Length: 169
Image 1: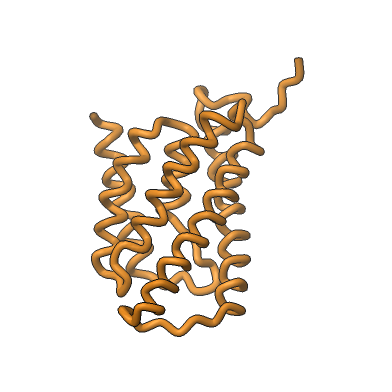
Image 2: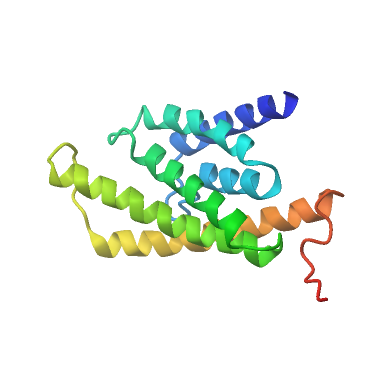
């Protein structure tokens, strides 16, 4: 129970940070990184606890539900590929989860925003050159931060030791 409270408080902190500050060029998706971290290092139950906080962040956005739906579908997709496609818990798997999840997140998020714009329910003017540039910058910084989080988890935890090394039979 104590871990769930810590996860809720951390996700609330990430919601406040992400919705309060404009990260500008960095476009670090803190909740996504936290969700993948929990899914990879702990359990899907901890990752599901983050989703109500995502809904809380979505309350204050112009396009209600886009962020929540994107992260919800990404969580389902990542859970499936983590348990059915990937076979081990190494660094490349963690980075692969982050990369594939980010690609799917941005595809779903921008399709939803495009749909809102097409139905004239939002205030969006799409510039696809800017969106692609933002995607590449976001992908770069999110993968660098996820690499840093992985190395930190390996360094400070006995439970996750030797995940960084490749073991050959």
